[in-house]
Length: 588
Image: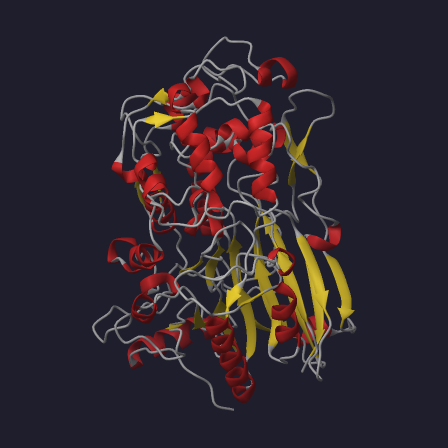
């Protein structure tokens, strides 16, 4: 059957096949996919003839590859000691693999016949946070735990440790396939700030990062404010978190948190999907408001707010009543006299969707590729952030933009993107491809149908409609997403003769249990396909040392603090059937 092939030179193709033959995965492209623009064509500008061809972006693991558990939650999971108050983490029992058969029967002997089709790693909701940003609303912490987390000053150290974990993986843990790529499924940044975007791109592709804005010498934020509402790690103040939750005093913590660290960058190609926090101020307000832009780079920051006012603001956000941030703006204007001075910084300015795509296309952030990390010059020309890309000879990836530019943290897609998706799915059917769909929002969190102000008159489409569309197309195997910060795997039955697909939602890397997910697709050659999911933690040790404020020690603290964060939810790891799984489907 015809297949779209990666654009390579003859020599590179020989090298690729030699590698794949040696590892027993001849049909896999091992990460040399290329991006297809929103019109379905390859972007020539993104892949000029003179661009270097990467036949393999990482050193081959020792051959032969074999199934393994080391470095995954199949071996051990960070678990808290028994007790109350602040609890220390240590090595805990592994999570076993669960076979799920809602969409297909698990037939005996399939292991011996299995052929790998694709293998990759999903990152989601990294939320790299500029914790000193003036627009952060930490004062709403009593209304929502996501407003401020005691661990978030260490988000960059945690992300780098996750990169280190992926770099140490031997391949796919079940099929023993080489890993193709890493895909981030949005909320890579937290405040839609240029500073955070720079940190994200350097964490993924490699570089030195100083997770600090404002005064280059000192931290200026809520954690040295003297306000008992927040954990004051360097200070002896008996703040709320020390008093009520047993948080430790850690002298030197804030200096260490803003100190330069180094990311080795991924040794795999990586792709990027956009989330609401990457597009909207605060993750929920419509962009391009000049007041918010000026405030973001300015010298004032609100750090305290009475509970009643905070509750009214957050209740309004939850109910979708302030998508443009009018009430939030009024709050900031009326509380100007209560604000504290901070050092202004232009790097805190919000970035536009065009700037987001352009930053991914910047050669300085290419790392192991591909150029643009999925985005192409066509995305720049069309002002879009969706694309398709070739994962392997048999598998197509489709990345969607589910953020509603009109505001609010729930999502949807516009009519033009929906029509593009329909064309891609029909073309995949003609080629007899398998399809993996990526987005930030889940099917249950796409209920925001406000009109895009830049596309007046264009309708918006929600999760129910998108689920029905995917379920009606035979090639779709899985929809991989994040946003909910929770592990959740949902079967969606097929329609119109299709076999159905699995929706795979993965926990964030900012809230405990701070997980990423390896996903493998295999043909069982018995009339079924299997999608395997295996959760991984960062490379940081489970046990922490309060005196270790090195890059590794901070990454370990990042995990432990997230477990102990007031308001953290114990349900985010999901049930056993949402963690390490084999998801069986009938072959269409």
